[in-house]
Length: 257
Image 1 (cartoon, rainbow, N blue to C red):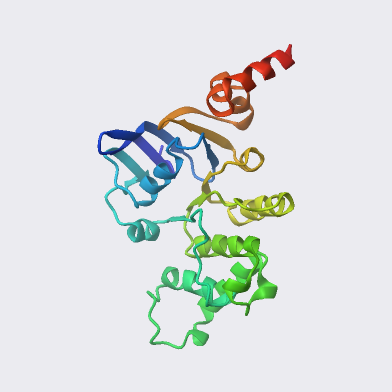
Image 2 (tube, rainbow, N blue to C red):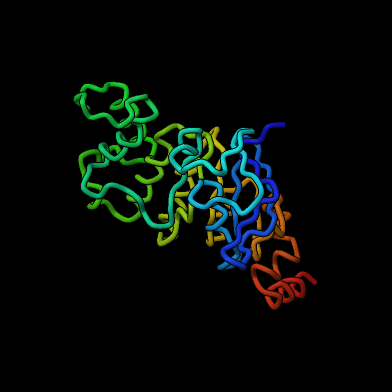
């Protein structure tokens, strides 16, 4: 079976410190996976390895069966993997529409050439308009990205992330800094715009993870402690101890009796 994304004995060391310790993970196409774990567990390093920002010390990263580790981030993006970051990564002095159109250009074969008048690129403009509607920013078309609310900027970044048509999407703490109501709306937005795509997301908000993911991968000290459906992960005693703390796990067990 060819998986949308597969990690084989993936390892990463910085000097003598091993951060990622032999992770194996196989994700079928169309599955949504939440990655959780305590601070310092190696979640962001794992994302950086998958997206090409870091090169593994050993092991493999396969995208649709093709080995991608060793390739540059832009090469991996063109093969069909796109990611967002913890810090909003948009063009603040461009409008919402212009931001999304920039994200669309390469996927339509324009290769960021500005020798043509952009207003005449009907396909790029139509795709950007569709994306605006998908991320609920169609009423903010001409607003500079810098003038959007924080939640709107995050929504715009999601739009840019999916603009190139990538089949595998990585979202790094997409709801960080949002209110409960904003978070609830954003979960629905992520579900809507990633239909048919494979999604990996790193999140600290357990409500987001359990509300969004088909499966949850628990990373602790650079190792994969568990990988299962949300209910099974929630009931896993090892996960409770590693992620919530042994005292919490014990109190939950006591309450269960």
